[in-house]
Image 1 (tube, helix red, strand yellow):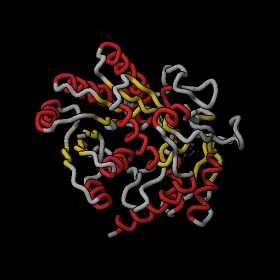
Image 2: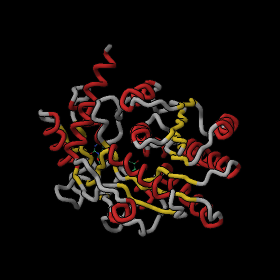
Image 3: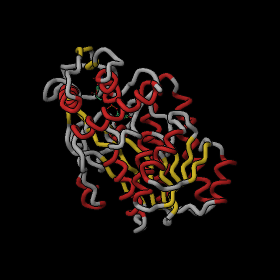
Image 4: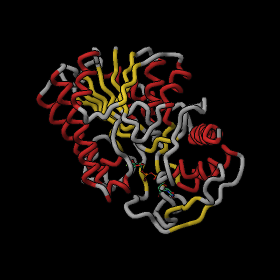
Amino acid sequence: MKVLVTGGLGFIGSHTVVALLESNYDVVVVDNLYNSKIVVKDRIKEITNKEFKTVICDVQDETKMEEIFKEEKIDAIIHFAGYKAVGESVSKPLEYYDNNLNSTITLLKLMKKYNVNNFVFSSSATVYGEPTRVPMFESDPVVEATSPYGETKVMIERILKDIAKVNKDFNVALLRYFNPIGAHKSGLLGEDPNGIPNNLLPYIAKVATGQLKEVNVFGNDYDTVDGTGVRDYIHVVDLAKGHVLALKKLESKPGLVIYNLGTGKGTSVLEMIAAYEKACGHKIPYVIKPRRPGDIASSYANCDKAKNELGFVCDYSVIDACRDGYHFQVEENKRNQK
Ligand code: UFG
């Protein structure tokens, strides 16, 4: 089975390509290197000892994309490519709607033309908006999102639902990710955003390795275990495995399916800092700051559906993820100094 992976050199994409190759899928990666590095291709090959084709191209480039559809007999697509910074999307809404929606529509048009009927979409827990309760279930309402980034996920889900309604041959899995963290245990793949990280774990990693002074904890007056925000942090290798299981599910021609991919367990910011301290073996300095606008108190998944229907269970804990994330950051810093 041949799988086209858009954004296959990015954080979640690269780990998923590893999982696919290890499960003996043929893989074709498309990536425009907007938020990834070409060296990731060689690192995936080093980890898996397997070959795969990589095309450097923007998914919105319909002419180039069509060449891939003509040349390769694609059976399924996993679509990761897209802009993903929540805060940036608020200041650049047009760019987010343009890129995220048009790349998906380009793919869907080509899928129709070349009769490719299996699609896995990188969605997000953000489609639940400000939840009225936790944990979140797949049957919970999808509401207006709190950012243009989130709204692109809501809109794309809607487009896919509408297509699935009329095209009975179309099989699509909407995978709603919670908070992906960690890295590949080899230290070769992980998350190393340019500039100052927005997300908690890459930020902690830079404090742990001395590149930033202290962690800013955004609010300690939420209605949570210790007042700090609670999230469902899932090891990226577990998340990658979820994509392979979703692809297998699509082989049974289920039409549209929706799964939360998380651990089902919430961890607060202070608990996360403590877990990271255990993983790296030293203290992580932090300061309490005001709440970050747009943040919610708690978000964690009910994962029964993915467990019952896909056999999805997580192998790794948050401490495993901190250890692997720290290892990657240390190795990446060494590589960057060379
Ligand atoms: N936080 C800090 N300090 C930081 C960064 C974050 O205290 O420097 C806190 C936040 O306030 C929040 C928690 O750490 O309580 C997690 O924040 P992240 O920025 O790491 O993640 P979010 O939950 O805000 O966002 C993530 C994804 C989005 C997705 C969203 C909802 O990054 O893509 O979950 O599913 F939309």
